[in-house]
Length: 315
Image (tube, rainbow, N blue to C red; front, side, top):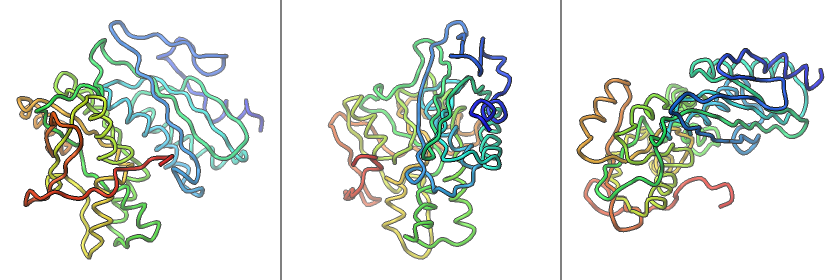
């Protein structure tokens, strides 16, 4: 099968939302009136971001989901994507399942695949996602203000705990592992939450490298600090020990793809209403402070020692 046959069979779909989609030297896109373009790129590398024998359908889902999560953090609506694949071989059964997983999620969020590339090489998957956000309304990392509440969505640490189980660092029962593995392999981008937070949150980021690491980006860009309450964080819990590993997964494990955001305390009722509307837990975990740095406290108000901040490819 040639490169162009591969693209035509597995990755060419109708793109009514684009002026021109797959098949030319470049796609042609037209923004809606009053909108700005939000663009993000993520690469998934075999052996670094996923196991070489990963289920291709789940991998297709995750390849797009991690990019959608970036748009969620900006409060943007996803519209288009490009996909670049480096493949060690043309394996039609793998491509069929991968494309099914990719397009199933794409259709759920109204994303059209409008271009990309394929080449022979080690298995690498790279998506560029493009979306729209009303002019001047994008959520940014730099907007946090002293006195803001700090919130997180969902439950943290489940994906990292599934990975710890697969690496034999902890032993989960079958039911718990199934729940955590779903979070690792099929993350749910919080697009609706990001859009709902427009005009309510001052800053936001998606949690991909770990809560402390990603919150740290907000603190750095906003030139502020934070004080967190560990017991308030809605994190994964397990029975039978392993508390050190669980704590690391909650605070620094990564792959959660939840949103961390800050907002004035006056907006608490509005945020709780969003939580009810979306049937999504939103948890108040701390405060933004003027002093730089991040302080983490136990239930008794004592300081916790932070051993790990989060994932760093070159750390």
